[in-house]
Length: 463
Image (cartoon, rainbow, N blue to C red):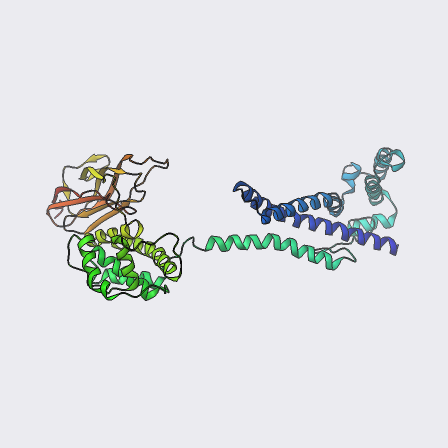
């Protein structure tokens, strides 16, 4: 009996090992096959792809070989139900049980060409219901005529191969865990470097103060100063005496329509951004080195910093002049060359207060009005457009992105767009105006001319 019990234990452990190994191989295939298909779709025929294909093939072959043994163990580990095996109802007497046993034995007995495993299950079911008293007692107490059954908890290891099985389990687990960790880390890592939080906070404080830049060149110098103060760029050349004396004046003449030269400090990053906007900061594509790497790093961080400046300057009731120069600075950073495409144009601008779908005859102080804008723009030359609405007193009212169609547009296509924007009517009674502009954030020279709509604000009826 001891030898038989040992053989049963070894068979159970081997079956459990096959089952859990099959589970791990299936999980590994679920992780490796999508990666392999993605590599093949992108035509990445590298050594890594070949190794991954071999691993997938090996895992598939191993899983197919382990499946019969794992299936047998899973069937054996299932709950033992003699009534279902003998196909007799609950509470059937011994006569019914023996009749069903003899009928099934004639079909499944190995001497009659039946399956030995199936016949063993039939014999055990007969023993549990109509066998010896000890067998019936074992079934009543332990759920099986042979008494307590051996159970295997956790990852069963075949006897004599514990170390090899542990190594296989660890390798299969690594094949599943490592790609998942890499995917999570890749999802959390931003695709492009972003400015630090301290840089954004310093930009916010600079725009909120009285010394906020009022010119495009001043804005570029501010961006450069923030990058040099809060970002570890390094290797940018120091500002020469010639640039310190002439560059601010050149920038004011070319970028600010002969406005007074900006008084912001001229730092290495600021000088680089200004020279690039003026068109004399280019270098050959084959140039490399620490200076070129530092310029690329400064430009990579300057673009999201300039976009943050546009977002901060577009808040309601902020001076629209600051938003205008923030947009101009963003254009110089993202696309300094001026295009030859025709600029955008505001075709129609109207402000009204609606009650349901009916426009009211008067616009009253403090009402929530509706501004309808119809514009035409060159969607092939620029893809990032912004509708800017400002009050007649020079304060920003609303900024909304202009949604473009998903289909690609050919160069020169003129796209007409209609937008409806809500804005608050000033509380001051009298003449009022709304000024609308459409600006391209990723191209220079495409902004529309401002269009003004004048209306009269009436006092509220209860005043």
